Every structure is written in C-alpha cells, then in structure tokens.
Image (cartoon, rainbow, N blue to C red; front, side, top):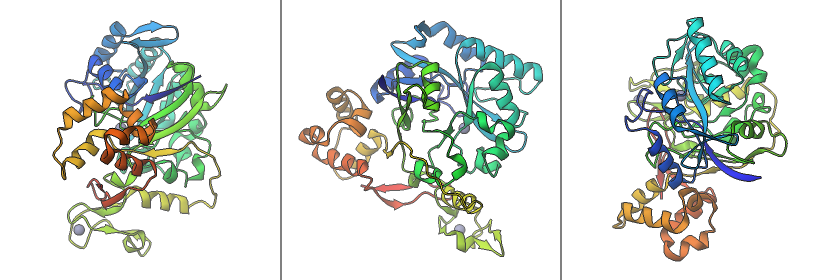
Length: 389
Ligand SMILES: [Zn+2]
Ligand SMILES: [Zn+2]
C-alpha cells in the first residue's frame, strides 16, 4: 500500500471564473511542485474538455495517466431544484462520463454548455443518475453559505432523500474542517474529504486542500475503496486551510465587518438579516453548524483521521517578506529543490531538517503543525481572515 496525496476537485478553463490558462500541462507541473500524487480532471462533462482529456490521458493499468500523474475523471455540477447545490462527481471511466452526458441531455436537464453545468433536477435525482452510470457523488463545500447542501437544506437526508445512503463522501470546503463538521451526528457514516476547488493551476490555489489516501495506486477503484474504508484502503489525513481564514466563518456584516454572536442576532426567534449600520448580515458557517446541531440531541462518536491546518507556502513567504527582505520566487524554488515538494515541507519533513537552513520558516511551520496559529482577524461577512505570524 502507498500513501497518495489527492486533490480531486478542480476546474478547467471552461468553468466560469477559471483561469483561461488552466490546461493539462499546467496542472501536471503544479501537482509535481505541490506534492499532489492523484488529481481530478475537472469539468469532464464538458465536451471540448472531455475530448482533450481523452486524447491526452493514457490508460496505464487501471489508472489514467499523463506525465506519470494519475488523473481521476471528475466534474462539479449544480442542481437547481430545491435550491442551488454544488455536487462533486467522480467517474470510473470515460464510458461512464459519456453515459451520464446522454442521460442529462436526453432528460433535458441541461445543455451542458459550461464546465460546471446547472441541472434542473433535485439532488435525489442526480444521485439516481450517478448510480445508473457507476459514478460517485457527494456534496461540494457542504457548508458554504451559498450553493451548498447546508445552505439549501437542513440535512443530508433532506437533500438526497432516499439516496442519502449512496452519498460517497462529503467535501468539507475551505470554510469548515473535521472538528466543525463532526458536530453533526447525521454525518457519522460519511467520509470527509478536503480538496482545493482550484480555478487555476497557481501554486496558492491547486492543492491548497488535499486528502491523503492509503491505496495501491491512483485509480478510481482504489479511491472508491478508500472512501468506503474497505480492503485495507482508507483516508489517512485531511489537509486544508484553517476555517477561521474563510470568508464566512463568523456571522458578520459585509459593510462594517462587525462580528456578531448567535445570541446577538436571534431576536424573537428570528435571525436578523441587517446590521445596525444598514449593511447585510451573513450567518457564518460556525453558527450555521451550531443551529443545525441544536436540532439533534445525538453526539458524534466517530473516530476520524486528523485534519491538519496549513496555508500555501507562498502565502507564508509573502507574510515573511513584510518584515524581512526576501526574494520569494528564489526562496520558493530553493525550498522545492531541497525538499522535493510543498507538502513535504508543510506536512512531512522533520522540522529540524528545515530549521538548519530556514530557521524563521521552520518556526512558522512548526506553529501550524502544532495548531498554534493566531488570527488578527477572523473571517466574516465575505471578508477573509488574516493570520498573525
Ligand atoms: Zn462549487
Ligand atoms: Zn454593519
């Protein structure tokens, strides 16, 4: 068995808001530098991209490979009936992708004219379709206040109905981590994954969140078994941003940035929507989970793999540059040359190795590994949190 770092939620240049330079050579190069061993294709239901994937990826054993990097056929879709919800889909092979395209087009659910298509069906129906073609489905960034399962629904059964049992994983997203999500006992049966949702191959986006699997190789069948924790395959580690960095961690005002507690915004049993300053209030992920958990008296008792908080190495170097002169590009490539890749530096190499040549950086990374990071500003109301280094 091998430990493989996977980032299985990407977008191609055919998704709205994605970089026009998001193509396969860029993805391969970035994955190598980041230390990602298995990567999602993004947008595989989109015809032009699908053709590009088919003519570039080669079948090696049970894996699809380009430049030695295994790819998993992957796409994000939005269901629009019952609220807008994003879902992540993983496919075993090209035939399965083509079959789902046919079902969607024949049903008239979408014309599939964008990288992340909108389907005029409820999530339960989407799960019927993915089952029919042997693909896996799970909610993307399940807690974000827009276009997510918990934004539109009160729970996973509410969302996927009779198919909740077939949901293969739950993607935590940038604004939640395992500790937060574990407060919801209804999720006990589900495997948590963390992926980047990268819209470009930039080194501060691709691989900023990843899941480490214990598997034989980077094929769909191995990932599928690991998600179900069968035959010795499993998830070993989740790595991602500290939720306090997310734009919607606390409840807060978009205009004046004031943060509010739940007590302050529940008035006569109703949630306030407007700040005294007149700006719009957005309920934060932390409070949303508290409200959801309050509806149930169950306590989660599941043992889950650790979740490690990191930020991209480039962001750390940028923050260091504020107090000391630093050639970020040069130091970054020196670091990668010395240690192999970014995940090795942030997650795996002994701190003592890094300390020898980079004592200040080593001290910061050690604080991340021990979860001792302070925040100058915790994210709220659409404003990113800011770390104090
Ligand atoms: Zn999404
Ligand atoms: Zn305000």
